[in-house]
Every structure is written in C-alpha cells, then in structure tokens.
Image (cartoon, rainbow, N blue to C red; front, side, top):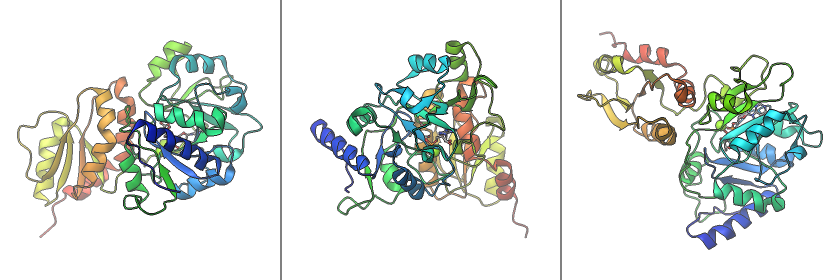
Length: 356
Ligand code: TXA
Ligand code: MG
C-alpha cells in the first residue's frame, strides 16, 4: 500500500478509488472529515477493525463510529430506530453529529467494542463522501475513530496523521496506512455524540459535546439531551484524560494569567501560551504564544493545531487561557478540560520554587 496525497482533482478521483479498494481488501485508510481525520476500516470486517485498534494502541472494548454515505440505509445498521433519530438525521446529516442506536443483529460486535449499540455518522466532507460512495458501491460502512494514537490530540490535517503514525518520511516507501489529503478540517473538534439507544427508559443523552449544541438538538426533538450518566455506553472521548499533547497542559483564567506566569518565571519554568485577551506584556518565561480567535467556531477550528504547535515549542508547560463558560463553548471547553486533566496539580508542581 502506498501513501497517497492529493494534488489535483483527477488524481484525487484515482486516489479515492484506490483507497476504497484498500478498504475492501481489509486495509486501513486515513481520510478527512469536516471534524477531524479518521482512521478507517471496513466496519463489517472484524480483522480490519482490529487493525485500527492495533494502530492506535486503543483498548479493543472501545466502540468506533461507523461512517455512512448520505444514501445509506440506516435500517441495515441499526434496529428500533427512534423517531427522534430520523428527525436529527433530517436536520443535521451530513454533518458533525453521531447517533448511538441499537446495533442491528447482522452487524459485527467488533465495531461496538462488544456493546449492543452502534455509533453512526454521515460526514459532510466531500472527500469522505466520495470515499463512502466508492467503497462497496456506497453500501458499506467505514469504521473510523480519530486518526491519532490513543489519548493523543486528534489530527485536523493529513500532515498531523502522518506525524501520528510516523509516515512523514514514508513518501517513497510502502506504508501500512494510506492517507487521503482533504485539507484542513473545517470544524476542528470531534462530532457531537447523542445516545438515542435508551429513549424509552432514559431519553436522549449527550455523550460528547461538539459544534452542534445540546440546545440545537433540543430544538429539533423537543427534548433536552441529559448529561452523560454512569450507565451510558462507554465512549473513550469521554475519559478524563484525553486529547492530550506530550507537554502538560494547564487552564488559567485570564485574571490569574499575569501573576501565575510571574510565579512560573520565578520558578525557572518555560511556558507555551494560548491566550484570548491581548496581553499588555508577555512574561519572559513565555517561549511561544498563540493568540486564539475569540469566536467559538474559529477557536475550535484552530484548537488541535494550536495544541500540536505549542507541544512542539519544547516548553515545560502549555497554558491555555480559559475560554468563556457559556453553552456555545461546551465542546471546546470539554476538549480543553480533558487535555488539561491535571491542571491544578501541574501548576502547583511547576510553580513551586526549587528550595535553595
Ligand atoms: O468527529 C468524529 O466523531 C470523528 C471523525 C473521524 O468522524 N471520530 C471520532 O472517533 O472522534 P473516536 O473513536 O475518536 O471517538 C468516537 C467516540 C468514542 O468516544 C467512542 O467510544 C464513541 O464515539 N462511540 C462510538 N460508538 C459508540 C457506541 N456504540 N456506544 C457508545 N459510544 C460510542
Ligand atoms: Mg478520538
């Protein structure tokens, strides 16, 4: 298998056909979606799905999302489909929304990590759609988690995918993973996940916030999705520590920024900073700084690339200025909280002066 990169439209058509053939033969293809890049395999081939887990270093009891073409028959993949699922599909597909439904009896348990549900999503990215239409004549499903190592930052460009799997220097050598390049992902954070598999008992549950907010879902189905509960189907994107770069990350309120940076400087630490407000003076401990956009969609679009760039600065600590707390920011704040899962511990450890 070769690493494929797309330069022109006719070349892309060929690459998509090749990628579909790789998937049909049980291989892995990384492909762009509007949220993040996915690492795909034939959802109905348990060995191919197992190869995703192996490449990611992910526990095999974690379910993966099945991506479908816009024309796909949902009834083939899921059973007991609640009317609310049809409403959400009509409103938001293709787009960044994943629905958890009861898995149809013929669908292998491997895609669900053995659970009796299945996660379905129809992406809007044109390259993802072309791939889904080419694969098994549009009747297949592509199982795809984000194309990153387990727990690490999701990729929003083809270059990030190559970085994650060490494919950067493989342009001339055969590689285990084909990569389709569809430019930078527009949305930038993973899809919103709504569990509709327990409508009769608990109603809709928001498993992972994303660009499509709980409020917009409530407008469509007339019910506000509940916050995640202990009995919800497992979702690795909901682990406390996730979306994390190698450098420790801390979240800091704007008001505390200047004084904490001073403490870190006094303790001899270096910082890579993502700030929102204009800073009057940047502390000498700041090795690299990114001014993040103040609009939420633009912020989400830039978030993972910023995390990767700051991770590459070689600082002791990455500091993110905490974004606004209002509900539009729920998806962004969720990812930041998980990237900075030990924020307080990291800050107190690093800002303590080394005793003489
Ligand atoms: O935007 C996205 O959703 C991206 C792109 C590639 O589509 N995919 C993505 O996949 O984020 P992944 O595997 O990194 O996260 C999918 C989440 C996981 O937390 C997984 O556990 C959950 O969806 N999930 C998938 N199927 C599920 C199921 N049957 N029940 C509960 N959670 C499920
Ligand atoms: Mg992921």
